[in-house]
Image (tube, rainbow, N blue to C red; front, side):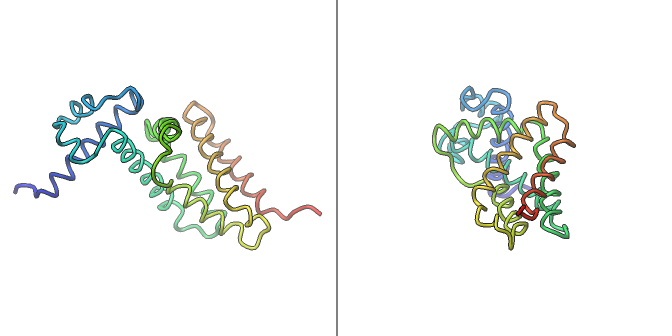
Length: 192
């Protein structure tokens, strides 16, 4: 049975995203040219520009797909948690699992920030949005709740630095323990 136009369109988009992802990991955004992407995907330039207005749009589509996959993994692994703390710790473990996908750390934590600095980026990070929700539950009733935005930013940065360190050979268990200590410190009763 022949595929529908929609199926062919989706398949072409997926092939372009996959080819671009591979090249962005191997060469980086700046060193990857659109003719290379077209050749790797085995499609025409017209097909590329039918789906994406330019290389930047294709890059951000790759980044969005990666970030959404990370967020989905975190959601799936923390959905059954019995407390906000447990959800955040399970989410941290799922984040480290998701970031262990080959090339993902380079794409999300090296290439995307570099490109963001150049063109101010696009979209929001779904994993950071989930972290903010989790922290708001963890900190409910705490004085620290008024610091939710800066805490989300700082803890998100800690997760990113930990993922890079793990990608470079750091001991994951040590980083998971550090995240637990950090979260426990946020909910500990203030000293008087």
